[in-house]
Structure formats: structure tokens, C-alpha cells
Length: 277
Image 1: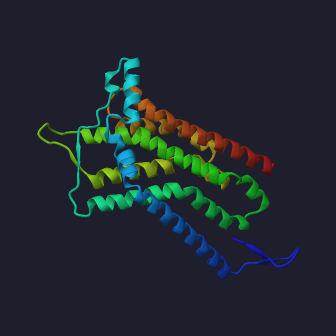
Image 2: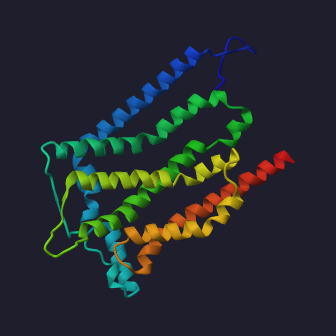
């Protein structure tokens, strides 16, 4: 990465390796401090963090379950009415609740601080980009943040509740009751939420891979059918019942994400061909 520092009206001096290192160190320190501040704030609001957010999908009054029930009434599909109270959360480790509190606070702090973290990283790499690269990357921080937040919301309101209901109510025998460890419940929700947030960055990843020539629109279209089958399998695994409607609720947004990636790849590929021509 080439960066420069001003030495006069029209003169610039290239930064040395140690100056790059100092600037990177300062960027990382600001990111760490921001993450610590947002995590501490999240830690302080324990009741909101757990009762109103993390444990909310275990209540019948959760907005997703009420919406599903309403849809079930409209379409005469009672299986859409979900009862998530089929298992009990327990704590089996001495430090289990404190550990869960710490982990959730860090995840919440990361989500809150994400726009600032991306901005700091952008500010660090921006001086090393050309004017054309800066223009083409304008708005990238906002787009990445929005996609990640959409993935987090999709996971929290759709995927996580369905997963909790399915796995929490699954039983190999009536003689076995489900008592789920708090740490298992928390880790499942946070992992699914972060993974879905990263999955929603697929359009950005496809844009980058197309730009450097690894992926083409033709390649993506070739494996469209395979992608559809994979999405339907994932939707079928995490939905609580075998009805097609609940599977489509999960599958349609994921497929739309794939088609958006194909469209972005096609546009980038056309631009590359125009520049090459």
C-alpha cells in the first residue's frame, strides 16, 4: 500500500514502513477502544440485552410467532402457530451466566461498533487507493454495514426463532425432556446471527471476486440450480414444520441475495469488458 504525507504545497513524501505500522497500530487501538466502549455499554444494560433481546424468541409473544400465527389463520395452516416453550433453559456451570453475559455483550458491542470499525479501516486504506478506486468504492462502508445489519435482523427475527423452536422441541422419545444449557442457547443464537450477517455480505464478495477475475456471471448462472437446491435444503432443516410456506419464508430472501449477487457480477463484468475494449 502506498501512502503519502504532505511536505509542501505540491510535494508529497511516501510514508516509510514504520510510519505505516504506526498508523495501523493507531487504527487498531481506536477500533479496540470503540469495541470495548460499546461492549461495556451493552454489558450495563443486562435486562434489555437478555430479557428483551436474547430470550425474547423463547416467548410466545415474540413478534415472529404472532406474525406466523396470523398468517396461519389467514391461510388455514395451523402448523404455522409456533409454541417455543417446549424446553427449559438451565445454567449448569458456576460461571455460566456470567460467561454468557460477557459473550453477548461482546457480540452486541461488535454489531453496534461495526460502522465505526469499517470507517476506521476505510480511512486507513483510502490513501493507498487511486482516484478511480476511491470513486468506485464510494459508499462501500454504508453498503457493507447495511447488508450486515439486514443479515443480523433476518437471523434474529426469522432464522433463529425457527431454529430454536425446531431444535428445542425435537425429541427422540417422550421419555426424554429438553433442558437446554444457557451457554448452548446463547452460543447458537450468536453464531447463527453472525454467520447470517456475514452471508448477507455475499454481494460484496461476489463484486470483489468478479473484479479480480475469479468469478464470472456465466459461472454463477451455471450453478444456479445447485444454489436453489442448497437453499431449499437449508430452509428445510431450520424450519419447524414440513409445510412449504415456512420454508419459503427463509428460502426466498436467501435466493434473492444470490440473484442480487449475479446482477452485481454481470454489471461489473460488463464494465471490465468495456474498459478492456
